[in-house]
Image (cartoon, rainbow, N blue to C red; front, side, top):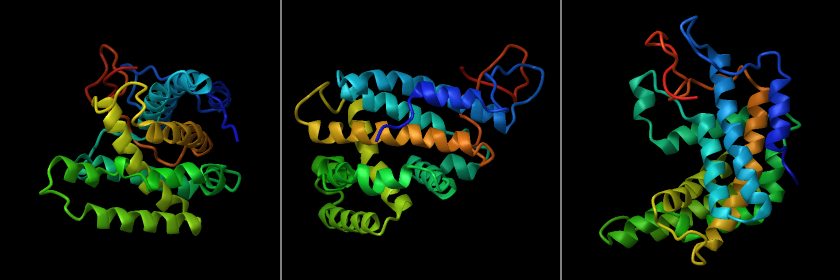
Length: 249
């Protein structure tokens, strides 16, 4: 199963009546459609770059990282309340993934991707202790997370049960918890570029991201009014009000 390409998704986005290139400026404050357009612009730019690495299999490490950046662009937010600012990153991802699963329409391919297409890759990630954060907490400090094995077995069984019962949201939330550990290993220098040691994590991880991220984008294009939130780093223009656009394009 091939997801829509960045080029196809970009064309679909541009065909929408609410499409425009986010520009910001002193003429007014951003609204929810401005926020969504900015998210999509950024995510699609990184998705296009990720595709180049994934399709040629030249650099699956880079493909995973670029897909993750595209994914991050879809859900990261500037917290307007202390409650949101205090949320852990894992909770923010769970909230986003839960929303995607809840609002996908009957034609969405996310369910079939999770239940069948990526079933083997998902099982591999769920059964791999090297992408389970408590394992590393115990490995680096034996006094911490002493019960990591019990927790690992519990979480693995619970996620596999969710997979067998086709509870997509529960599966994805646990899956991205594991993928985030892989993301940390790569981005924080905890792995060798194209190293053989972590191929059992990188290869399925890259395939999972390559299939899921484009479909997440597709759902957001189909559901522009779902309240995707304000990006943490919006566009800034000289003369813009302080509460308007800030950040980079």
